[in-house]
Structure formats: C-alpha cells, structure tokens
Length: 208
Image (cartoon, rainbow, N blue to C red):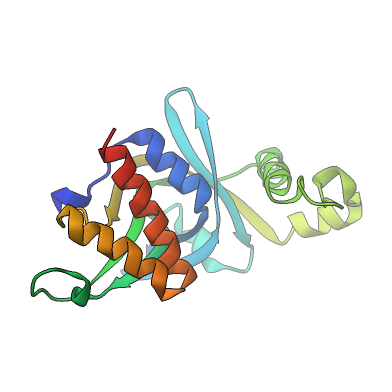
C-alpha cells in the first residue's frame, strides 16, 4: 500500500486497537496468478511475541485451498471513509478522500478441530455475551455444532508485515483542518461524522 509520510501509522498498540474495532476484513490470496478474496470477521491473538489473525470460511469456498500455495496472504481492514471537498480549504485545491486502512501480510495455515472450536467460542463470546439471550458455544446443541463444523474451515495467519495509513488531512493547516471537521459533521453522513470524530481525536492528541 502506498503511504505518504503524512499518513503513515507506526504505533503498534494503536494499529491493533484499530484492527480489533474494525475486524470485518478482506482476505486476499492468488490462484494461478489471479487474486481472489473473501470478506469475513477475524480475531486477533498473541503467542509470545507473534500476532495471529484467526477466522473461518465455508468449506465450499475454494480460497482456503490456496493457503498452502500462497507465500503471503494479504488481509485488509478498513474504517470509515469520507469525501473531502476542496471548497472547504482557504485556497484553491482539488478534492480528496479521507480514510483509515491497515494491511497485514503473513503465512496462513489451517486450524485443527480443537483450535477451530476455540476460535468459534471466542468469537461467539465477543459478539453475543452482552446480549439479553446470548448464543454461546455451550448453549448450542452438540448435534448442531458437529454439523456446522463439517461445513467450515478454520485458519490462522501469522502476521509478518503491517502497513497502516490514516489519511486524515494531516497535511492541512489548522484553520482548514478545523473547518474540514465542521463540514464533515454538517454532512450528516454517519461515515463523515465518524471521520470527523477521528480527526478531532487526532488533533487533540497533537496538542498534548
């Protein structure tokens, strides 16, 4: 991913926090030179000093079979994005787009059955535990679980390279930056508002 110096993020803790909050990812591999992708939620785990992304996909999805032949799997995480009108600047300029994105590269391998069950248990706890009637691993019948396990393939990706870009108008002067935040709030678009809030936090931290 091309990342101009203004937008490069290197803080590991910040990057992993972003990934955990934006865990619905695009997993990209190649088959005979052709890129293929699957969109699915991933979980983050750490073992010693290594980070792993874990997830699962349908057994009928042919992509999991490419894990053995691909030297690198690309996983992409993306936050909100928003159009930035150049009419919001104090000088003539062209429009652009603000966004947050993280790319991770690593080698993928297939999970064993007990590892897959652990991954599914943790995922259910993450998305169900706070609900009034949570659907957790232990609340589902063994017959249903065994049937479902036959239809999916679990995998993990050992993260070996990280690229993170937060394109948030960091190259603008303070007056323009503040105006962009205000204009994004005025858009009334949830994505625009979210980008505005991220920019406000970035500005706040820069003043500390």
